[in-house]
Every structure is written in C-alpha cells, then in structure tokens.
Image (cartoon, rainbow, N blue to C red; front, top):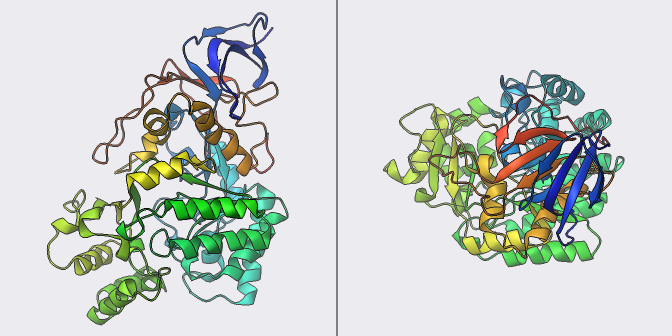
Length: 511
C-alpha cells in the first residue's frame, strides 16, 4: 500500500515531456509509481485540474542564513521551490578568519564559521524549511587568506585551494564567484581557474556573477567561459542581464555566446529572475579600488575630495568596461535606495537627493557602506529573450525574507509561470526550473517525477499562479501553489504552511 496518492493531476515529468493525466504514488519519501490503477493508499488527495510537477530548484539564492531565523520560513515553499542553491555571488558563511570576517556582507554577518563543514552542521542542526545545497564562495576564501588586499601571493593562493578542497570534502556543491564585488574583483583568470580545478576533482560546477553585466558584458562572459573551459567544469552564469541603456538588446549576443560555448564542449547554463530591476549594495556602484583595504579605508577615500574625483574618473573612463563598478550603467532616477542607516533616505531615488548625483552617492556610502538599493536598469525585450532560452532557468537571487526587500525573494517563480509562460510552453518551463537546474548542481534524485525520484513535489493551479508583490510592498504571499511535499512530507496544504522544518542540507552527492 502506498503512503500517498495524488489522484487525477496533470503530471509533468520535469524532463520536458508532454503532460498526462495520471496519479502519482509516494511511499517512504520516494515516488513509487506514476500512472493509473496504482492500487490503494493510506491517504489520497484529489488534484484533478491541477498541475503536478517536481519541486522547483532555485539555482541562485542567498538564503544561507534563513535556517538560523527563529521561526520556520515557508516563503520559498509558497512558490513551489523545494531546493535552493546558496553560497552564490562569491559569498558563503565559511570558511572564515575572525580577523577578516568583518568584511562579510551584512546579509551573512553574525553567521560566520571557521570551517565550511561547521556551517553545514549548524544549518542542518537549526533545520531548514526547504532543502539547501551550498556553494563555497571565492570572496570568502580570499578574505580568509588575504583580507581586502588586492594582491595575493602564490602561498596564499595555495592556501585558498586547500580551504576549497576542505569545503568540497565537507559537502560543498560547487564554487561561486562575484567578480563585480570586492575582494573577488581583484582576482585574475589564473586564480579562478586554480580554484575551479580543485572543484573538478569532485566533478563540481563553477557559478559566477560575472565581472560586468553592462558595457563589459561580452568580455566578462568570455572570461567566465574561459575559466570553465580551462578547468573543464560545468559553468552556471548567474542572473543573466543586459544592464543599462548602453547594452539594451545585448541578450542576443549573450545567448549566442552561451550556445556557441555549449556546442564547443563547455557545459554551460544560466539563470535569470523575471524582473527589470536588480538589487545590491550601493558600494557596488563604485569602482572596486574604492574598497581596497576595507571599510575604514573606503570611508577615508570618500571623505577626500581628490580621492572621490579620482574614483569618478575611473568609473567614467571609456577605456574599460570591467572593474569600474556599475556607475556608468545607471541614471540617478534608476537608483531606488532600499536600506540606509538614515531612515529618511530609504525609499528615495538618487535623483531625489539633489546636487551632483556622484557626490550624493559618495555621501550615502561614506555614511553607510552597507546601504543597499534597487536598480531599475533592464529592458523587457532582453528579459523575455533570456526567459525563453532553453539554457536559462529561473533563479530568484533573493535573500532572507526580512527587512526591506526585492519582490523576487517572494515571487520569482510564480511571476515566471504566471506572466511569461503560455500553456504550450509549460512543459519546457517546468523542465528549466526542475531537472535542468538540478542536474547542473548534481542534485541526484531531484528535479524529475518518475519512479525512484525523491518525492519533492509541487501541485499548482495554473489559472491562479502569480505574485502581486511590488518594489514598495514585496512581501505579498504568492497565489496558486496548492500543495508542496518534501520527500513525501506535506509542507504546503491547500495553500497554507503546515509548520515545522522539514528541509535538508544537501551535501555533495546526497540523495
């Protein structure tokens, strides 16, 4: 007898096959049968008229510290996401050195661990609400051996490789970088290849927030592909975008390069979130040189008019499109301030502050180096092109569901399925958010719906799926996800969270 039978649903296998009306049987946390006449079950749920699919995999999120929050957090389960890949953009909670852990961004601060395995153990003990697989971050490795210094010695690189190996041995699912941010921005290709080669010993991927997503986009993508090709590893290009008016329309170039690299033998995929604005720290607008030496050195530079002028000249120089921050891709009205220690600033646009926008920006960052913003820089045609491409899945890029936030944290997957996917496109869309993402990160048994698969399952109402969140009010509960199961345990029932922490930390090779 089966433990559970989902009866009469429109079943998608997650592999892109055509949907069929069928029952799904689950026993012992696994899918045991899909079809008709499957026999009795201890519990039967009628899902007629609803879509039954593998639980969604978010290949790019920043939920690293969510397990440590006081209450269970179902915000991803409400979207049908059963597994997230965290440790993205080069930052993970370990391995860290107490002497330099203060440079870890506020998103992770207070949860730094000396060893990567210590973080995995602590997150597992705290109990995630959905599954997490964790990348080790290049920034974190670099901070642990060299702080915010731009140059590293051969010995320090060797130490980084040792720490990376320890992290992979402990269960890291891959390596990430965030080359628009410091200290990762100081790295050259050889450094990145050396670390990716360590991951290759375990067959692990390299995920990168590239060095530029604007005027230097083509060169940055070439660099990412070169790292993967030289190291012989899978490549995940994080949150594809063509950011800033100068590169609107560049999605065709990006997708052509991805397809060409794949034809030439690089196992490359990418992700994108279904929004026209991104979110990050205001300090990322400045050239990375502004941050060399750490936070106090940054404040000192921004207090010096001559240093401000030199940074501006670097940011506006036409000689290079990478390593200069994101100032050139912005107009002042594009910058919506999300968080700042001055509560009167939050919610305003840079254009609202008056005076010279560069000077206003420098003042904001000097007063609060960890201030963040939402940047409205993308074009709808590029977004639609990325979302439609078979090599591109959906990644939320969302963080913990607390404080001022971006709506992608609460609604990326419902927005994608509700606003950008037709009925005919649904099998392919589900493939992209399930098996394609799961395979890229080695999530065995997940991302597909057939006998033997782990019973991470989502049941959704195609007519109701969506999210009404806005940049002003992002934390609105999405609609349309009716039931969610983690290894057969029901965590969403009739659209409501059933409580508890039933997720797992998925260490490398876990099933």
